[in-house]
Image (cartoon, rainbow, N blue to C red; front, top):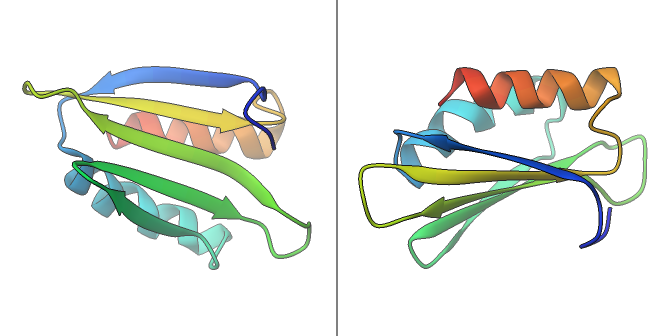
Length: 94
């Protein structure tokens, strides 16, 4: 995955902390080495698949200063089954 990898985005009514609290346990069922980190008011999650080198997906949750946050999901293969599953899980947490 690189900065030029395809991405999808959507808004959520959850705060970055609440969104990560919802999504991270779901992701860790399949990708237990995945993690989240604070970046100021924003949060960044790295989805790690132990069977492949590198990061499978990067999820940024940006606090827009109002009652919503912006979710950006960047991955190499958003059309693959694992990509679709990750995006669907993220949308369920919104």
